[in-house]
Length: 32
Image 1 (cartoon, rainbow, N blue to C red):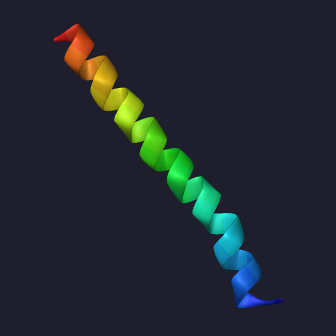
Image 2: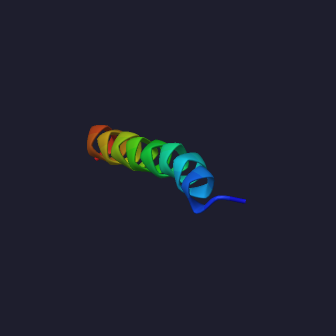
């Protein structure tokens, strides 16, 4: 088990959550 492998697998998930949060903000602005 290498720590580098864990980091590379966690990074895409973190980016996906960030994109998802941005989409939610856009939807909230459209609805308000």
